Image 1: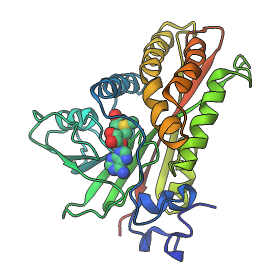
Image 2 (image 1 turned 45 degrees about the horizontal axis):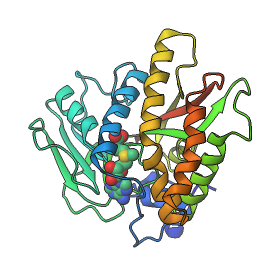
Image 3 (image 1 turned 30 degrees about the horizontal axis):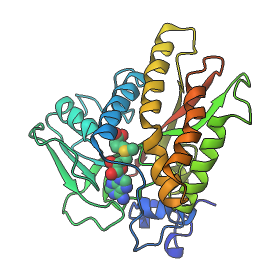
Length: 301
Ligand SMILES: C[S@@+](CC[C@H](N)C(=O)[O-])C[C@H]1O[C@@H](n2cnc3c(N)ncnc32)[C@H](O)[C@@H]1O
């Protein structure tokens, strides 16, 4: 069942639907309406640098684009909201690309720079709380939210989600079921479930948007190799960059969920990560992660 169906016990149509990501996730994530979801990843300089590297890689995967929703210089969005903006790099680049647009970025952490284009503003806020500003938006973007929730006014226009499914896949069975990578992922998934965060968000998005009445919903799924195993030069380079990014993030992905949520010691977690790291360097394993980009149009009222 689409978690949106049961929100407020009412309609599945957008007519009566104030777009709320909170509703979107509430049932599946078991998030209490009045409780902010906890976020179990770091926001320190190491993680912020990793986020900026990740931004660069995802942009390469998207052929240099920041979005797939059908905006262009000739048809720019007017008011853009980037929820859980992180270091704000996406929002800043959008501000440069669309100088006539107003761009807002929000996050729990004030980790965005102060020197930004004049049309870009950042707000510290929890996206699970009510929106206290008067603005409505015609384009809302989220990326790598790892299941944070959203209650934001979308005044027509587009909603676009970009999420990497961290669960690795292969097309040639080179990742055995007993692999350290899959065991680690299962541990993270169990901890994330316990923390009421949806870890495997990407594959759910399309159906959810369709079921609440978004129109022209589109989904594009990219494959990002976990290391430089592909033969083709372009994909090999993406894989090499992605491997570095994953390796740099391993502790950050793990310590909060496996330590704080599951109560495991840092030593125990780091021991497990030795094997994960080894597999991430193993080019006989042809694993990739799926990158979901899903967008849809809210019909005019
Ligand atoms: C993995 S980072 C992604 C950042 C950015 N979207 C990107 O793609 O680079 C996730 C971000 O979500 C933010 N976040 C998590 N839960 C949030 C919430 N409830 N409200 C606002 N921001 C949240 C975190 O502070 C973090 O900066």
